[in-house]
Image (cartoon, rainbow, N blue to C red; front, top):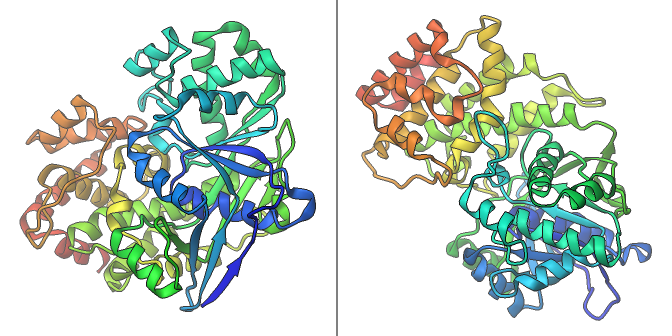
Length: 478
């Protein structure tokens, strides 16, 4: 284990980035790269001001403030060798629950040239069926009518941009760092739809002075449990209230469309490109889709850690077949990328015992993940007459997970699905397994029109209930 420190206390680091959503992934990814680049003398204008908007952020805010906003990041090597970084790139931290006006003023500040986001896949408030921004949401309606006291990220950003337009007119880039295909386009649709509904003059200004580059982000970063905090501090000789740990692999590909400048992130491993589409498709179709494929069967089999699940030869074979047969035909390799090597590396990453990611984290918010990671390629598979065994088994497993909340061992668990609608809940509770195929997550494909899918899905629903996921999985891969 090696300790790597960057001593930024007392140095003239100025804030140039405002980030909304100071969670573990942001602290292991964007903060990591920025922390490295701040070491260069000509990059001192790119410190980060973190913004937390939720009441549940209190523990994070309190912990970071207690240690002068510094924290430790343990990068867990696949070889068993770890590196521990002291991250000092977080220069300011504002909690919107405590001081909403400070958030608005910071967005308006012309020294902020990038507003970045990790607000989760579901946080962009888009209808899963139509893809349109949901204007009639209660909190959105509040922000449209009372812009001076916002309740949503859209309201905060709009009010900050409005003041920015009046006070200095400085352009700004809004950079999504969420796991979404074309996340910049998604952010643009969400924010611009809101702004257009609230203030036409601001919308005209934003169309000229705000850019939304797409980006692809990749680094497995588990949630940090109290046991992890104790383990990391003991192992690293630290006393960190809010440590974070992650894998040694990291990738960030960004379209170079920054209207007001950007850090020289390319010096520390970030790749800039004209079009991020091929990188996005590779990651979402292979890494994220495979994570989703693994999650529900593994959890129902009783596995709670990803590396433990990856010791199960049947699960590993299942994932590899999915990558090779179901996903790879729809994944053109980006330039200078060896797709076979990429798939091999994914298996190594999933099995990394030093990271030991939680299977429950992979299961979380499936209703938002399926439309992004699974449904686009599944639609192509159906249209091209491909074998639907693995996606049918996955969706049958997902139904069992949501409906019965009990694994093969009989252990009862709670599900984490914050974006389920009332209609979704009714479809899950139905005894007719075909009703489940009308879930909002599957609106991008007409599953009930595929007789092959229905036949396999219904068989898997029945078999999983009768003999358990483990036995059904074995029958699939033989």
